[in-house]
Image (tube, rainbow, N blue to C red):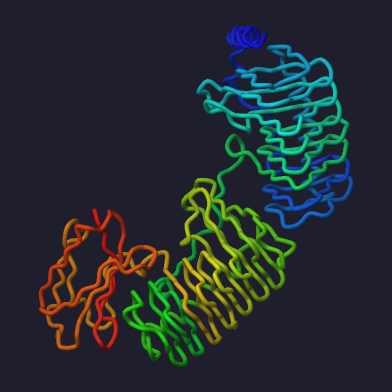
Amino acid sequence: MKKKLLFTVAATVLFFTNISFGQAPTMGSTVDYVLFTSSGAVGNTGISHITGNVGTQVGAITTFGNVDGVLHTADLSTTTAATDLAALYSELSTTTTTATHEAVLGTGEILVPGVYQIAAAGSITGTLTLDAGGDENALFIFKIGGAFTTAAGTEVILLNNAKACNVFWIAEGAIGMAAGTIMKGTLIANNAAISMAAGGLLEGRMFSTIGAVAIDGTTARLPLGCDLPILNGPVTPTLATTECFALYTANGALTNTAVTNVTGDVGTNVGATTGFVSEDVVGTIHLVPDAATATCATDLTLLHTYLNTLLVDIELLYPATVGNKLVLTPHTYLLDAETVITDTLFLNAQNNADAVFVLSITGALSTSVGATVALMNGAQAKNVFWVVNGNVSLNTNSKFIGTIVSDNGTIDIAMEADLDGRALTTNGIFTTNNISAIVPTMCSSVDVCSYDVKNEISVYPNPFNTYININLNNISTANHVQISIYNVVGEVVIKKSLVTSFNTVETSGLPSGIYFYNVFDQNGTLQTGRIVSQ
């Protein structure tokens, strides 16, 4: 029966090529909504993770936690969306049917692009595969003449370039998706409620023309592609000399306890820097304020001003409970109170490696023990920024991503915390204890940065293969000059004493990749840089 249906549909599609190759229905302003009703309540139970706007034109939105989107009730956005939803429903309902279908979909069934009509109530059980046949514009439209349900554990699978943004379901009755359903596409319940039960996963949208929208422990995110714009986030700020520093305060003591590994400079512009050991720092330890720390203070003020004046895209309404597997996308976020990151916070670049994330916090920032900021789908640490108008405390075993810019706040990074980024404050004492910090980018466009000896040390070839040469030129070897080479996670992979003015270091055992070096003597760092193994 299923093989016959697939053949019939395939033959029918040949006469309706506009279905698989034509333009998708017009979404209008509904494209930005993941949950919306023109009239009814929008409610949540449990911890749900939502990416996209949530709205109702008539009714209330209740019991949502942090949402990666804007909550709209009875405003210009919902007025426009209600009009556009009515037009979308009308367009879909009047689209020419290319195949009729029995009431039950799924149970391993594979369907090709088309407009499918179910005369009365319909349902999905088991797996349903939508095969686009390699056509990324292929449309799948399902018109159900009554209520529409899915059985527990139902899964809709997209195959051969099928996209969730090109899948549409309209029902002339309530839509109910049972626990554990994995659904794809935009669903519209006409004059009825729509719901998704616990553990559901939706790549698409849930709409009702008149009726409530309800979710329970659901993950729902807007489908990528089609009319949805690529998210870039705000313009990347200019770091200037702040790019060089992994740990910095413009005014206050910077104190370390125990062994701390740092790739990048450390220092303060007012006060003393103590407790850091040169062989553990791939960069300069500015023991006392100098020209570099003074310039950084000016550049840090400019960086903070830029970040603090960005227009906000999304406000996270519950700063005290950020994390808990919340997923954020490239935007400027406002957290208008003291913020605590618990469990895991995901930053999803949606396969855009240049996407920028800015999180602006009006109070203090802290993490729970073992809290993690994790990158997804091409997100990069160099493009993540936290502007904090208060103190910063990264708890034990935290794994943090991005550049922290604190204004008039202390910074404390506790034992065994990892920072893939920078921690900078305009004014406040700074303490660290047995941590790891790595700047995500080098501090200039050139690979070698010399602080004290004006590039008198030559390190070559770069890229290298089986060896590197280190020419100390006029540097005296009497002060026990050494070189340490680190991998990208800060581990020492080579350490060697440089006993003559010209030295060759064997590197044939190093895998291909990026490495950092630190040439130092008993008085501190002489030169650092980045080298590449081929």
